[in-house]
Image 1 (cartoon, helix red, strand yellow):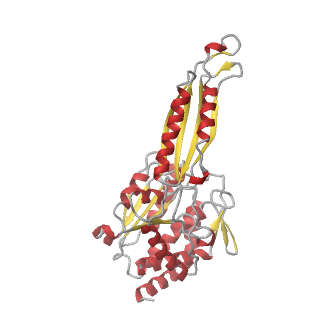
Image 2 (cartoon, helix red, strand yellow):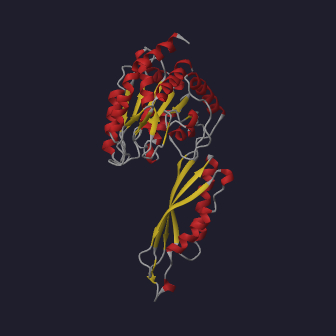
Length: 385
């Protein structure tokens, strides 16, 4: 172990007593994505808590979402091609009053956002604080970004994350830790489509022939679109919400459905969107209601590459040395900001937050003992990597 690493780990241990009080402060402040003021209150806490001398901070105002925060070291500004990007988010999924627990029983801490992902933010904070205490932070080329809209798909922050990532050496994303501390190297891409059927209303008894049934047309579209699912290729189409019509005895003039798309590769994502568009054109061109589509690919996939495999293996060595597992996670069906980073050609790994289960549920919890191990793994990677 080098003197630098020993100093950083010693500083991290000294910070251990303050970790849970800080996490409690963040968790007890609700930060539901749709409540912009609440998200920004947590952002203000982060701004205060990350106020280390060797970090410069920029706040990027959200547009209808919480603000996004970026911290950089002097070395990152001087040597942008050597930057290591750390990525997190400070919004959560629970509306005010829906889940307000802070329950510590032994090693199990339950509360909203402890796993997804205020525990991950605490990992980053403690490691950066330890580096600052050890006099190592200024010379490390680090950029840390925490966004305020990840839980709703990062609609506003994705360009910022891509900008921060472009040209970086690698990126580490601190979403919820997985079983056995498995490191995420692959995530499916996601797409969202809103398909609207425009028909012609008519009385179902007296003028049925004159109507154009929007629901019937949409139903034919749904049947064909769902048929594009190909489990062997990891491609799925799910129509999860349908609405339309006014009354039982009226030919409906309007109907709408919302479609979820998932895919493993960027090429498959583009092909899937094109296939759904063809189905809509064919079904809507048959003399019934017409169909219009809005939306498209929401998040690109996190695709495994030689560079991301090498990054995974380097981090896994640090994780194992810290007492964590170092295995590779299976393909993850949901997206994250790691996908945005990967799409600009920067190797990224994910799932580096504390161990736990139940994110997005009232059973969300972490294993408290894993926090110190996650901090140690990050320090080992940054100081020795």
